[in-house]
Length: 314
Image (cartoon, rainbow, N blue to C red; front, side, top):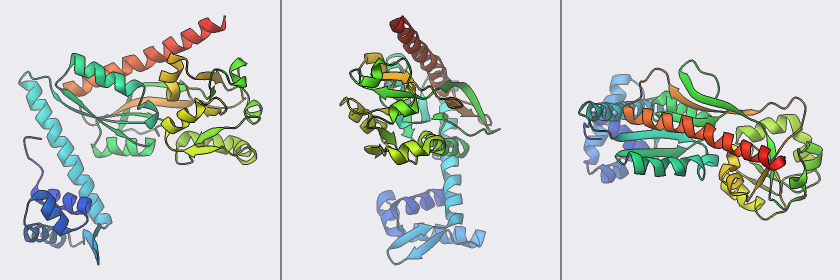
């Protein structure tokens, strides 16, 4: 950021929280520890609230300190947007676009997006954080993300979905797996085979467990992980199966290294995915470029995948 609009006290609170002590923040910033300590004490006196717990081995933010850190992050993000907006007014197509996305998109939509930006808009930088859906929504609210591409986002009047779609659950296996020969799979079919599964921190696993807890109890997954890339590697071995959506395995389905079969179970609701922005904050031109590309390419690739599957089933 070239405007340097973040007030020094907020910058010092951020640094102490990040590095764990005034001395460590001093070394990181190149600012005297006494100056940092003086500014933090002044903030605490003005607010009549301690911002840090002073521990034997460092400092930890209090609830009030966390609130100040959130404010600092919002201030920094807004200052960077202002900088990008001023550059845009000068006719410079450049800027940083902050995207909060899921781990499942890390080897599918996002690399393609980065390559397209480099080819078509090389002065736009994509800053992507892999977050859980609640954390992605929080990043939008705090202003530390411009866009969020996430599963099962909770409804919010502050968020606007530029694109969303249902993502039915299905069974993913290697092409040589016995379940790959079926037109559709039931949970009973799946229970006869070893499985891998997302860990319980992920919303899709929590939803499946509320409806099919017996499946995970009677046939415990051989591998649990919050890393979809690890789970997909296990599926490629040929013996395992997993319940998930097409988008989680999009590049593997396009290459034919994995197969997705719809899950046929009455009353099973699909997941949703949404590309959301904060309705209270306008996007820069760079943000709009990224938004429009994602909103076009995600449905295009899903439609092409489904059309190829229908064609192959005839």
